[in-house]
Length: 252
Length: 95
Image 1: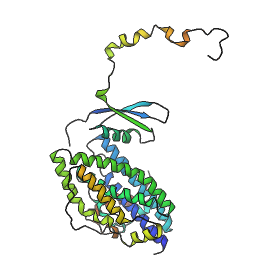
Image 2: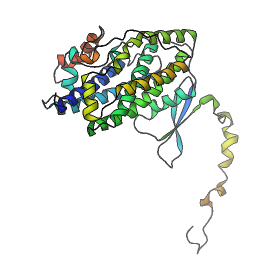
Image 3: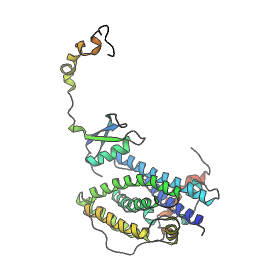
Image 4: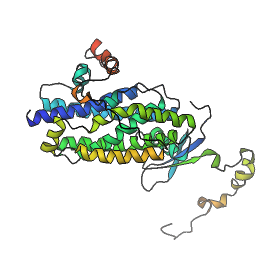
């Protein structure tokens, strides 16, 4: 791969994480138990979709084949999405959503912080903007997880179950594949080993404050970075792409 | 989902440095920290401010509408409390 191809693939993958998580959160619009949380969730979802737009636009320009952000979001098949398995997991109940957001955003915040120092100026600028958004999202989700974990017996048990259920999707985040290695060498990209250490410390602190327990070591699910997804993913993509594929070029 | 109703909070926003905080509206939240988050997400989405105050509505001490007459009407006939009541003597500059 040429350096441009490496950067294109990497930026696209970052865009996939942002888009798919944004799409998951969009599913909750008009379904939240409280008006104020409803607004917060919609704001956050749009932040991720905004990040995906910036990343896809840049990836399209790097690729040089004239593909727009919409082409990349709506006209690629499932297996071409290289997002992490964690972000495609269903919303479930409120505790599941909270745990997913905390586990992913703790990682994502570290990743973005590292990317602000990468040698590609445009990617560093996108990361700097996204970093501010995600720092706030994480603050919000962390507070909720602590409330749930340290709340009633029922909310504690549900939060612990969510943590146990989603834990197996966290290992993949820190397993550097060829693309991660290349971007680290060529563009001063993130060091996933260092991020893993920081993540364990941060998540450990939140879990402790929430009076929850870190799940036992287990086999970690992998495949998202290679385009192999969990069974939920096809439905998400189908719903997301239905309108632009049925009415190509549709505008508001 | 909880059947309890979260307490009401009043939200005050400072538009920019140097201005005072102004009442923007109200919202529901379970605790102070959540109220601040909700205020941020509900009232400052379009760059409305640089600082937020939230306070539980039941902590605000308000004047009683039934006492409006005793509270405010005595001020109405004391026109000498307004600067416009006084004539400026000739020869006074910079007033």
